[in-house]
Length: 465
Image: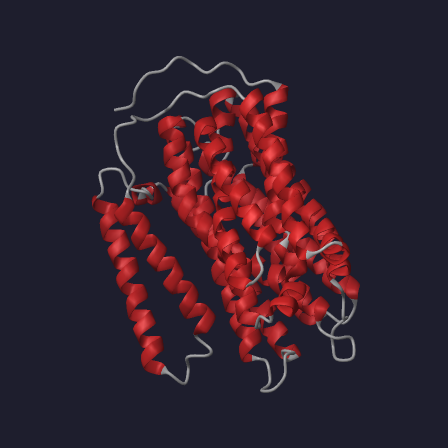
């Protein structure tokens, strides 16, 4: 039984701007690793599999934090929780900035992962202070600004890392996150809690989900290296199954579960999660493989691009992603979520197959990555918007948290699989993967994306009156 609270006062433009500024800053901090991953691999002597692991550590932490953040936001109010999360993010950004080696950098990325939980909290604030129709557009705008921040981070990371150092590429966006957090604290009104505050945190569920995700990443990242050690690989698979089974059992019985799996029985939420997972697996291939392909030496089949050049080449994709959020929000409002997702899936499949077939010119990669980024923004924003507006107001954080966790897991699985493909496709004694490994990664991602159309066909139009 939920408690009754006085209605929240309407949110002003300044408060929306503060949430937008926070979205831009966190997006910039999240994105700096992608264009500079080849540089980080060289400086820290990482293999492709280790590079793939570094690129998803932040997201794995986000998968753990997001459902807790959403639940606490519904219970205590979104503003109260988001301020505390951002304190952890700022600490993580400073650790990453000062990191002398890979283990410390991984620790910084783990702490930065708290930023992923800020999105469902922003949605709680938006829904608490805006009418239903305006909230759909606002959710799309906030999502788009997050991606816009990622665009800025993608463009600036290379020049900062090469002109100053890799340490500054983490420090500068961390300062921006700190400033934006102060603005949110000062300008955003408090939102009333939507759920009772008595229940505690589901610590057993958190521990089991952590074990499940970490073991999954180990299986995906080390699978190719453990082929010659089948007993070790089998042991990891058994451990993964045990963690996963235990987590589901605990969550189904918990009075206040970390991830309310009962939400998945609602068609709008369950289908959104399945679609988000499949789409993000496809997206992750382009996100990870394209920068790696740019960095392959020019005397082979690559372009020998620097971190600055890679950031510049990725800019059109980041720009496409930044406009996809608002476009998707408006499209869902006018046409329904099914139409937007269908268009996005088809566009992504075309982009991935195009990358597999043609990648001998820079513009091939730039165009293919832009198509995939635009498609991903359309689909994921439509899924989040569909979910956020199909549940009760008090369930907004939990439901959107489920979708965002699925996004993170899909992306992490896709990156680890493509990283393993590159590692397996690297000849002995060489650090350059075979070109066929890149083609295999793009084709596999396209196949997974096309499979999502089977789920799209079962969706309702998704227009909420």
